[in-house]
Length: 188
Image 1 (tube, rainbow, N blue to C red):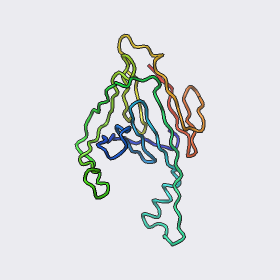
Image 2: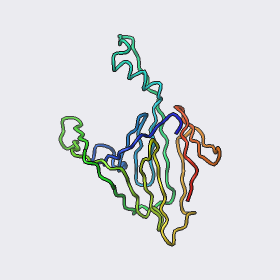
Image 3: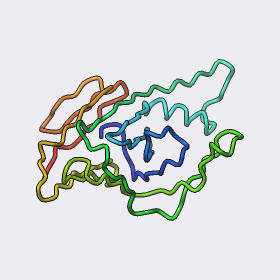
Image 4: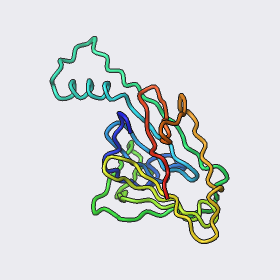
Protein backbone atom coordinates (compact mmCIF):
# COMPACT_ATOMS: atom_id res chain seq x y z
CA UNK A 1 0.00 0.00 0.00
CA UNK A 2 1.12 3.55 -0.56
CA UNK A 3 0.21 5.65 2.48
CA UNK A 4 -1.98 3.06 4.14
CA UNK A 5 -0.13 0.40 6.11
CA UNK A 6 -2.20 -2.62 7.05
CA UNK A 7 0.11 -3.53 9.97
CA UNK A 8 -0.53 -6.98 11.46
CA UNK A 9 -4.30 -7.08 11.25
CA UNK A 10 -6.25 -9.08 13.76
CA UNK A 11 -9.80 -9.93 12.72
CA UNK A 12 -12.47 -9.39 15.40
CA UNK A 13 -15.59 -11.54 15.18
CA UNK A 14 -18.96 -9.81 14.97
CA UNK A 15 -21.24 -10.75 17.86
CA UNK A 16 -23.80 -8.04 17.14
CA UNK A 17 -21.66 -4.95 17.74
CA UNK A 18 -21.84 -4.12 14.01
CA UNK A 19 -24.45 -4.68 11.32
CA UNK A 20 -25.12 -8.33 10.50
CA UNK A 21 -23.50 -8.05 7.03
CA UNK A 22 -20.11 -7.69 8.72
CA UNK A 23 -18.59 -11.03 9.72
CA UNK A 24 -15.16 -9.80 10.89
CA UNK A 25 -13.46 -6.43 11.24
CA UNK A 26 -9.76 -5.77 11.01
CA UNK A 27 -8.20 -2.48 12.06
CA UNK A 28 -4.94 -0.97 10.91
CA UNK A 29 -3.10 2.29 11.48
CA UNK A 30 -5.10 4.36 8.99
CA UNK A 31 -8.47 2.59 8.81
CA UNK A 32 -10.39 -0.66 8.87
CA UNK A 33 -11.42 -3.55 6.68
CA UNK A 34 -14.85 -5.16 7.07
CA UNK A 35 -15.16 -8.74 5.82
CA UNK A 36 -18.70 -9.42 4.59
CA UNK A 37 -20.54 -12.37 3.03
CA UNK A 38 -19.44 -11.84 -0.57
CA UNK A 39 -16.83 -9.13 -0.32
CA UNK A 40 -15.19 -6.54 1.84
CA UNK A 41 -15.31 -2.84 2.55
CA UNK A 42 -12.12 -0.87 3.13
CA UNK A 43 -12.31 2.36 5.14
CA UNK A 44 -9.28 4.63 4.84
CA UNK A 45 -8.49 7.83 6.78
CA UNK A 46 -6.19 10.65 5.67
CA UNK A 47 -2.86 10.02 7.47
CA UNK A 48 -2.13 13.76 7.87
CA UNK A 49 -5.50 14.28 9.59
CA UNK A 50 -4.81 11.37 11.95
CA UNK A 51 -1.40 12.83 12.84
CA UNK A 52 -2.94 16.25 13.53
CA UNK A 53 -5.59 14.69 15.79
CA UNK A 54 -2.91 12.67 17.61
CA UNK A 55 -0.92 15.87 18.26
CA UNK A 56 -3.95 17.41 19.97
CA UNK A 57 -4.76 14.24 21.91
CA UNK A 58 -1.22 14.01 23.25
CA UNK A 59 -0.98 17.69 24.22
CA UNK A 60 1.45 18.71 21.49
CA UNK A 61 -1.08 21.29 20.24
CA UNK A 62 -3.37 23.40 22.46
CA UNK A 63 -7.11 22.89 22.10
CA UNK A 64 -9.20 26.06 21.95
CA UNK A 65 -12.89 26.75 21.41
CA UNK A 66 -12.11 27.37 17.73
CA UNK A 67 -10.21 24.11 17.23
CA UNK A 68 -11.66 21.94 14.48
CA UNK A 69 -10.20 18.56 13.71
CA UNK A 70 -11.54 17.27 10.40
CA UNK A 71 -10.90 13.66 9.51
CA UNK A 72 -11.09 13.00 5.78
CA UNK A 73 -11.99 9.42 4.97
CA UNK A 74 -12.80 7.27 1.96
CA UNK A 75 -14.44 3.85 1.70
CA UNK A 76 -14.58 1.45 -1.20
CA UNK A 77 -16.10 -1.98 -1.56
CA UNK A 78 -14.87 -5.10 -3.30
CA UNK A 79 -17.62 -7.55 -4.25
CA UNK A 80 -17.00 -11.08 -5.45
CA UNK A 81 -19.49 -11.40 -8.28
CA UNK A 82 -21.54 -14.59 -8.48
CA UNK A 83 -20.00 -15.82 -5.23
CA UNK A 84 -21.77 -18.63 -3.42
CA UNK A 85 -24.31 -17.47 -0.86
CA UNK A 86 -23.71 -20.74 0.97
CA UNK A 87 -19.95 -20.52 1.47
CA UNK A 88 -18.87 -21.13 5.03
CA UNK A 89 -16.77 -18.48 6.73
CA UNK A 90 -14.43 -19.59 9.48
CA UNK A 91 -11.68 -17.93 11.43
CA UNK A 92 -8.34 -19.54 12.13
CA UNK A 93 -5.30 -18.88 14.32
CA UNK A 94 -7.19 -17.62 17.36
CA UNK A 95 -5.40 -15.05 19.50
CA UNK A 96 -5.63 -15.39 23.28
CA UNK A 97 -7.03 -11.89 23.81
CA UNK A 98 -10.52 -10.62 23.02
CA UNK A 99 -12.46 -7.36 22.78
CA UNK A 100 -15.56 -6.31 24.72
CA UNK A 101 -18.16 -3.95 23.24
CA UNK A 102 -20.53 -2.28 25.71
CA UNK A 103 -22.67 -0.05 23.54
CA UNK A 104 -25.22 2.05 25.42
CA UNK A 105 -27.13 0.99 28.53
CA UNK A 106 -29.02 -1.92 26.98
CA UNK A 107 -27.18 -5.22 27.64
CA UNK A 108 -28.84 -6.76 24.56
CA UNK A 109 -26.54 -4.49 22.47
CA UNK A 110 -23.42 -5.58 24.29
CA UNK A 111 -20.95 -7.99 22.73
CA UNK A 112 -18.53 -9.40 25.29
CA UNK A 113 -15.57 -11.65 24.55
CA UNK A 114 -15.32 -11.05 20.81
CA UNK A 115 -12.38 -13.22 19.82
CA UNK A 116 -9.57 -12.16 17.54
CA UNK A 117 -8.06 -14.22 14.74
CA UNK A 118 -5.11 -13.92 12.38
CA UNK A 119 -6.84 -15.56 9.39
CA UNK A 120 -10.36 -15.74 7.95
CA UNK A 121 -11.24 -18.36 5.32
CA UNK A 122 -14.26 -18.38 2.99
CA UNK A 123 -14.72 -22.05 2.01
CA UNK A 124 -16.19 -22.60 -1.46
CA UNK A 125 -16.75 -18.93 -2.23
CA UNK A 126 -16.79 -20.29 -5.80
CA UNK A 127 -17.02 -23.99 -6.71
CA UNK A 128 -13.81 -25.63 -5.46
CA UNK A 129 -12.29 -22.23 -4.61
CA UNK A 130 -11.55 -20.93 -1.12
CA UNK A 131 -10.56 -17.36 -0.19
CA UNK A 132 -8.17 -16.70 2.70
CA UNK A 133 -7.54 -13.27 4.31
CA UNK A 134 -4.52 -12.59 6.49
CA UNK A 135 -1.82 -9.99 6.95
CA UNK A 136 1.81 -10.32 6.06
CA UNK A 137 4.16 -7.73 7.44
CA UNK A 138 2.33 -4.47 6.86
CA UNK A 139 0.00 -5.67 4.09
CA UNK A 140 -3.50 -7.12 3.99
CA UNK A 141 -3.21 -10.24 1.89
CA UNK A 142 -5.67 -12.66 0.37
CA UNK A 143 -5.22 -15.93 -1.45
CA UNK A 144 -7.58 -17.81 -3.69
CA UNK A 145 -7.01 -21.51 -3.06
CA UNK A 146 -8.00 -23.58 -6.09
CA UNK A 147 -8.86 -27.21 -5.51
CA UNK A 148 -9.12 -29.88 -8.27
CA UNK A 149 -11.94 -28.99 -10.65
CA UNK A 150 -11.78 -25.24 -9.92
CA UNK A 151 -12.12 -22.74 -12.74
CA UNK A 152 -10.11 -19.55 -12.07
CA UNK A 153 -12.38 -17.68 -14.52
CA UNK A 154 -15.14 -17.95 -11.90
CA UNK A 155 -13.31 -15.34 -9.79
CA UNK A 156 -14.72 -11.91 -10.59
CA UNK A 157 -14.16 -8.80 -8.46
CA UNK A 158 -16.16 -5.57 -8.69
CA UNK A 159 -14.80 -2.39 -7.11
CA UNK A 160 -17.29 0.27 -6.03
CA UNK A 161 -16.46 3.63 -4.47
CA UNK A 162 -12.88 4.00 -5.69
CA UNK A 163 -12.14 7.20 -7.60
CA UNK A 164 -10.33 5.21 -10.27
CA UNK A 165 -8.58 1.92 -10.93
CA UNK A 166 -5.41 1.63 -12.97
CA UNK A 167 -2.58 -0.81 -13.66
CA UNK A 168 1.12 -0.11 -13.21
CA UNK A 169 3.59 -2.94 -13.84
CA UNK A 170 0.60 -5.34 -13.51
CA UNK A 171 -0.16 -4.04 -9.99
CA UNK A 172 -3.68 -2.75 -9.39
CA UNK A 173 -3.78 0.86 -8.17
CA UNK A 174 -6.95 1.81 -6.29
CA UNK A 175 -7.21 5.60 -6.28
CA UNK A 176 -9.10 7.23 -3.39
CA UNK A 177 -9.46 10.77 -2.06
CA UNK A 178 -6.99 9.96 0.75
CA UNK A 179 -4.31 8.14 -1.24
CA UNK A 180 -3.60 5.23 -3.53
CA UNK A 181 -3.77 1.60 -2.43
CA UNK A 182 -1.63 -0.86 -4.38
CA UNK A 183 -2.64 -4.48 -4.83
CA UNK A 184 0.38 -6.42 -6.03
CA UNK A 185 -0.01 -8.47 -9.21
CA UNK A 186 -1.38 -11.97 -8.68
CA UNK A 187 0.92 -14.94 -8.79
CA UNK A 188 0.48 -18.70 -8.66
